[in-house]
Length: 273
Image (tube, rainbow, N blue to C red):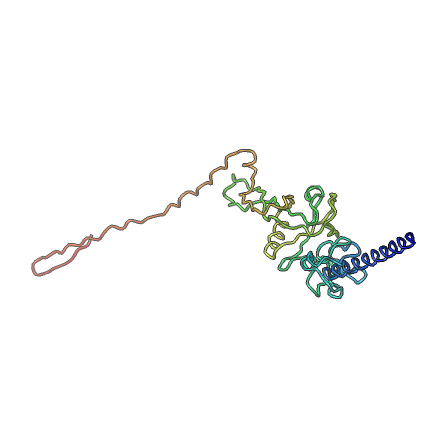
């Protein structure tokens, strides 16, 4: 009898424990469900300039208290948008990484508002040995001849000067990928410039030879230089400009006219000399 009563009490305890576990699990799920929200994340790696399709999106639960700024809770809002930067697989899709609605795919989606994309021809030297990659900043150096006065034959006309600073590299050749850090020697580099800078760059490549100078990505300070000349490079003092000889002016002296009144009797006359 005692054994039967003990078995009954044990079975009852197990049932109550099992019920408590189920109730606790339901309570935790309910609390967790109330603190999460759906967020659109990338199912695959989305490259820069790509148009997003529904097959690239996955809706997942995300803690409501840690929602990424600009995240999307509706997959329809992301459909047909264009990525302006690379989005990794499993990464939340945020507004800051997308081009404005209606933007077509391609490199034009990456160009910032008010900017222009311009391509310049480079080689392994001009292109900084392939280290000028998309996302890097470069300065542009031009080597040209100064305009000098023809009579000043001793003046050094060769000059090398930085004409544009902190220019963003958008793409190298036809590759805009910013995740690859391996150097690539290419024959063309596409740069992002303002309209005024495009005019300067177009003039610079027509009057001289260009070189790209790789700079620190977090260095925003401009540097003003006067340019380097051959005389300055060799430490030769710059000759003084030849002053033109003053012109000789011919002056004609005019003697003042004198006159004398001559009186003879009642006659009066005037003589000039």
